Length: 92
Image 1 (cartoon, one colour):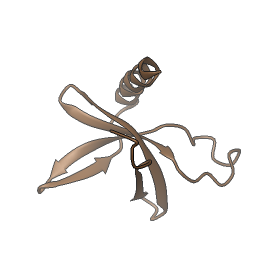
Image 2 (cartoon, one colour):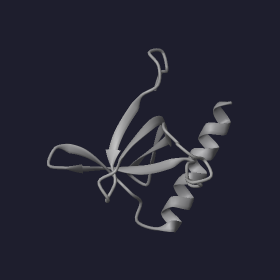
Image 3 (tube, rainbow, N blue to C red):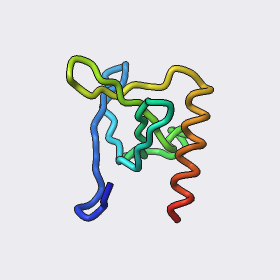
Image 4 (cartoon, rainbow, N blue to C red):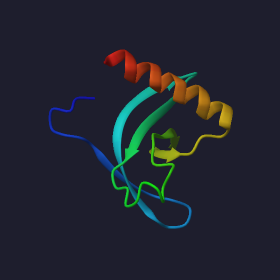
């Protein structure tokens, strides 16, 4: 994705109804599943929110719509995280 027009932001709502603004970083496909990586765009207190690093969500297709979902397991998250790290560091 080109940054020609600036970063892409997305607002998602978590299970508690809180809105979170995310900045799109990259997307990749692994084993037929599309994953997207984001950074939180707004972090009020870095010490309060220690998990403000890379957010990885998978794209689900339901009823003709693309939906974002959390990953199913820690193993899936670790595998996809490693793939994103390889991709991001290979681009530099």
